[in-house]
Figure (tube, rainbow over the protein chains, first blue to last red):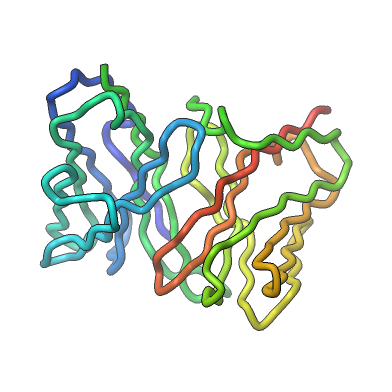
Length: 117
Length: 110
C-alpha cells in the first residue's frame, strides 16, 4: 500500500497568480500521477510525473500551465500557473504501488481544493 | 468537506437495501476495470476490480459485473449501510493510465 499526503489541503488564490501543490508518498514508487477533479465532475488525468525526465502530459494539458517536478521517487509537485477561475478544482496526486493479492493498485492522496477568485 | 458529487447522478436507497450502480465505458480494447469509492474530502479508494476475461467478480458485500458486448459495468452493494454513502466511479486501466467514468452519488438513509 501507499500513504500519500498533499500540501496545501486547500487554498484560495487570486487570478493571475500561481500555486504549487506538493505530493509526498511514504514509499518509493515509480509511477506518480496528477489528476484534476472539477466541481461535481469526474477525475481527469493531467500528467504522469516521471522521475528524472519531463512529465508526460495528456491531451489538453501543457507544461507551461501545469509544470511538474519529480526530484525523487517519493515526491512530486504540480504548479497551477497564471490561474483563472476556471482552474478552481480539486487536484489529486496518485501513485501506483504494490497491493496485496492483486499486483499493483493506484492510491490517491486526499486532494488539494483550489478556489481562484 | 468538499462535495464532489454536486452535479452527479444520484441513487438514494434505504439502509439494508441492495444498491446497483451502473457505468458505461468507452474503449472496447480496455481489459482491466476498477470501481472506486470517493467520500467527501477524500481521494478515491479502490473497491474491487475485474479483468476482461471475467464477467463477474465478488468481494465482501460487493459484486462487479462486466458486459463487454455493450461496454457496461455494474457495481452491486449488498445490504447497503450509511457508511456506503459516497460517490462511486468506474475506471478503465490501460497501462496504468486511468480513465474515469462520470460517477454516481449514493445516498443511504437510515
